Amino acid sequence: MTTYGKDSINGMAHANGNGSNAVWGAVAKESFGLGVAEFVSMGASLLVVGVADQVAPRMLKDCSKMLGKLINPYLDTIENGLQKVCKLEECQPDKTKSRQERSENLAKTMIVFTSAWGLSMAAKLGTRVVMNRWMKLAAAPSSGSWLKDMLPSKHDWNVVAWDETVHLGALLMMNTVNAKQTDQMIHGTTNMLKRWGLSDQKAKEVASMGIIWELPNALGWLAGVGAIAHDRFKVAKLGAGASHVEKLTHQTALSGALSNTHIP
Image 1: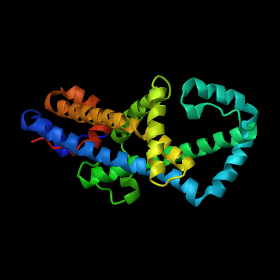
Image 2 (image 1 turned 135 degrees about the vertical axis):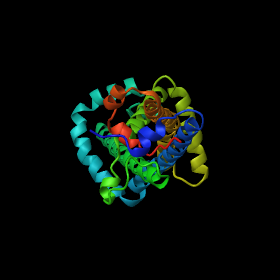
Image 3 (image 1 turned 30 degrees about the horizontal axis):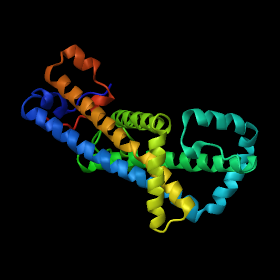
Image 4 (image 1 turned 90 degrees about the vertical axis):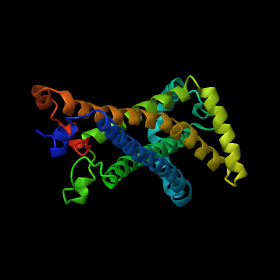
């Protein structure tokens, strides 16, 4: 069982007045760190698009062909399903293209977006851990092992889970109910990027990634901030007024993860 640190129970016993300000200060710092992690996450996902187009286009094309062959027999079912959850223009099948071309384009989209999402999640969690350690808000004291110290705590996963749930929920809304407005934003951003020198295809890909995937990040960040505040004040309240039984009941990884929140 993980127990509270020395400053956790004793230091939180007076969670009022200046104590509350101390918790808000920790919330503000951790929220800033999450914001930095969001920007790093965005950069990571956009980097995948750039690498796919500029550094490894041949590899992407070959992989898309291989995956396209597996998708081809189920293309109609996949396209019909996509049209139900994504009403954007780019989600509508282009019947002017052959079945093989549509299968390969769908495969390419799956590869790029899956890779972008995976790298962005790793970048978000990693940056969050680094920022928390830099601002002395780490889950636990340094163990001496860099790899072990970089592992996210349950609190980290909780914050990112709220972040991504709202992020994906907003993404779904933009693809369905607000599809018309989303398409308009993509068109506007695409035209702007083309004026900056990007090709039609690249401008549309970057605009789509930025609008569809990254814009909901703002709402996800707000949800993450809410989770940060909830967890930190929960521990502060526990330290200030919980009974002995409640303290024993709640001596979990969360208490250890937030043991560095010092409340005078």
